[in-house]
Length: 167
Image 1 (cartoon, one colour):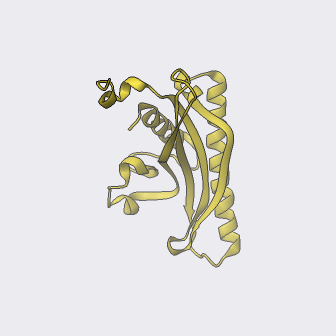
Image 2 (image 1 turned 135 degrees about the horizontal axis):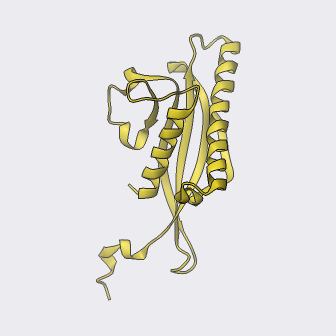
Image 3 (image 1 turned 135 degrees about the vertical axis):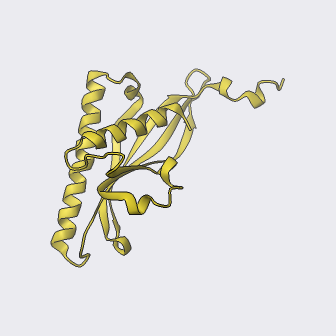
């Protein structure tokens, strides 16, 4: 996996460790990196809510010249919480409100860190046009929000060694 994706997922995990509603720890898990943790079958039993999920769903390559080539990864940051009664509209609304605030807090901190230019690699994260949509999983009584963010990195042609020997 791309180094930028690893840095970004570790950064999101650190935000979850510091967020007052989450307080993620290794023992009290409130963060899951689906790119790495999806094979962990005990994860569902260990996870505490509210929780934040991170995953990379794909990427696109763009640029009209070799100097402008970029790889843009699509990443999802999802905040979910569990409700005890899916028919209780008030509880569902409260869950949606809580998880919306978690998403807002995460992006407010990202924006602040980008403004401070620390960490420097965070400048490759685009905060323009982030789509945030509500999610529900009634079967598991989970409600929350998903934000789609783009991570842009240079597309290095020398990384593609298979074609460098072709003349």
